[in-house]
Each structure stands twice: as C-alpha cells, then as structure tokens.
Length: 205
Image 1 (tube, helix red, strand yellow):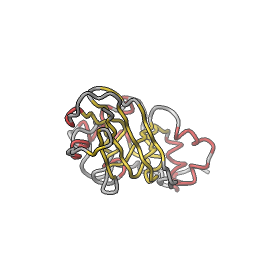
Image 2 (cartoon, helix red, strand yellow):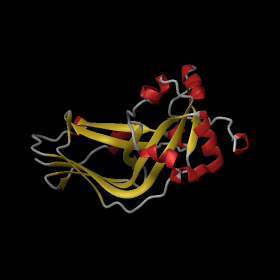
Image 3 (cartoon, one colour):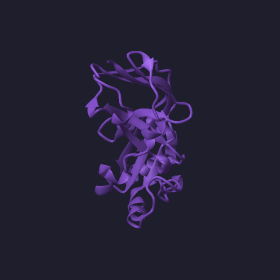
C-alpha cells in the first residue's frame, strides 16, 4: 500500500541564531533592513534553522492509503512538541538569539511511504516545534518531519509555493530565558521570551 500524508498551508523557514551584543544593537537600530546587509546573509545557513509547515486553522491535512482518505485524529500531531531546553543554544555561551526568516509561504508538503503492509494512525511519529513564546503567538506549531512505523518517508513532495514576506527580526535575551526555565517557568505558555534592553539610542554610530 502507498501511504501519503499531505499538508497544505503556510510553510515556515525560520532560524534562531545566536548573536553578539553588537549585532543585537544593529538589529535594534535597523530592524528589517538587516536582511539586506551582507554581514547577516547567513540567516538561512547552519543548523539553527527550522523549516516546516505551520499547523494552524489555515492548514489543511489529508491522509490517504492507495489514494483513499483515512480517518486520523489530527490533534495527535501537536500533542508532544519538542522542548526548547533540548536546543543546543541553551547550553552555549550565547547571550542573545535572533528570530529571522518567514512563516507565511503558501505551499504543499507531502510525505509518501511505499509498501506499507497495514495502516494504523498510532504509528505516526511527528516532529513538531512549539514556538509560542519565541514568536509571541499562542499554539504556534511547526511540523518539521513525519515518520510512520519508525520509518522516514520514501519520497517528499514540497511544491506549489507562492511567495513570502520576512518577519521583523526579534532579539531574545537568552540569559533571561535560562533563568526563567531554571525557575520552572513554562517553556511554551506565557508571555513572549524577553528581549534585551537594547534600543537604537545605545548603538554606536
């Protein structure tokens, strides 16, 4: 049997980059203009990026077996999101993080498995990030990867993209985040992670 999991909605290409105080000051001064500055063209590079499908009210999901739709409890997709404290930057010496990228490109993602012997929705394993406090938006889920019965898909189909707009860069005070989490603050619920007290007035021209 061929199993296909398809999500049509808004894709995310977001990065959480450790940045220096100097770069944080530059972002406070220039805002979204930093995207066009050569020193910051690295936002798509490295292993700090998260690329996937935003799971929200605008996301439509279809699951088929041999072309026929099957019933699945879609709530299971977001029941066990990855924890932010597992991310490498919390154990680093970085003082600040910066959110860069986009989260509004309309497109379609499909995962396809060949030769599936039987279908059981409980065999799905979803890699989902929850960025509520990072993006300042409740229930902010990003579907990064899907496995079935412990197996990655045989084929991926990511297409029908229709353009995007970049988010305004947001700097997060990583030291304050560490303190909050150490005190037992929730990782996903609550106010957005704090920004440092850096304003354009503090930037040295």
